[in-house]
Structure formats: C-alpha cells, structure tokens
Length: 141
Image 1 (cartoon, rainbow, N blue to C red):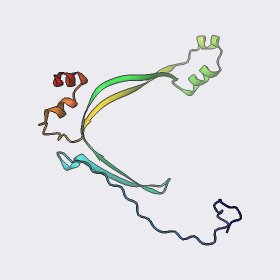
Image 2: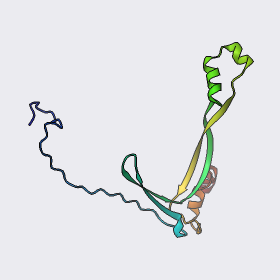
Image 3: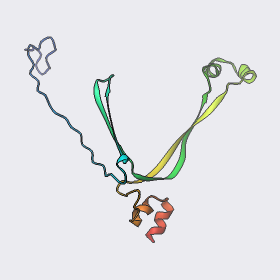
C-alpha cells in the first residue's frame, strides 16, 4: 500500500478504511444540599466546533479568606492615547498628555467545603475551615 517503510499511508493511497463507532461518556457526582435549584445543568451545541457542550454547576459553601493584588498595569484609555504613547515625542506628550487607567489583577484565596450543607452547619471543624487562617490556629489549640 505504501513504498515508505514505517510511514503512514497518505489519504490518496488509502483505498478502504474500516472505522467503528465508539461511545464516550462523562460522569460527575455532586452532593446536593438544600433546594433542588442548587444544581444546574446547561447543554448546548457549539456551532464552531460542532460539538455538544455540557456544564454541570452546583453551589458549595465557600469563603474568601485572603485577597491580594498580584499585578498592576497601566494601559491607555483609548486608541488615540495609545497612538500618542507610541509615536509622540516627549515634548508633545508633555503638551498633550496621554490618559491612562490602571488595571489590577487580584487573586482571591478561597476555602471551599463541598460536603457542608448550607442550612445545617452542625459540624464545627467545617465551619472553622471556612474562616480565616487565624481562626484555624485558634481552633487547633
């Protein structure tokens, strides 16, 4: 079928190809606490990739324990201000300054407890886990 040893045949050289149908599946288990509307399933056909996209979402108990700004970046407000920054000489920028805005990337550190019911906080160590790290140290003593 091919003159090249160790090489796959090109599409022009393939006379007959037998393929079989294979089933693929995905399963995700989420605990449901509280009301049935705590879980949501969205499905749609992605027209670009011609594929089925399914999203299973559920609410869990969570708390942000720490936030910090990771990066700060200054960017021009409009295309004209970007043009000024790129092409104007210093004397022109002093005369007609470019307007800029600051974009901050903020990181949130979140503790989540997927097996704690929202309405029944009966296990103390789960509640302490959702508190700040200082509360965890106080609880361990």
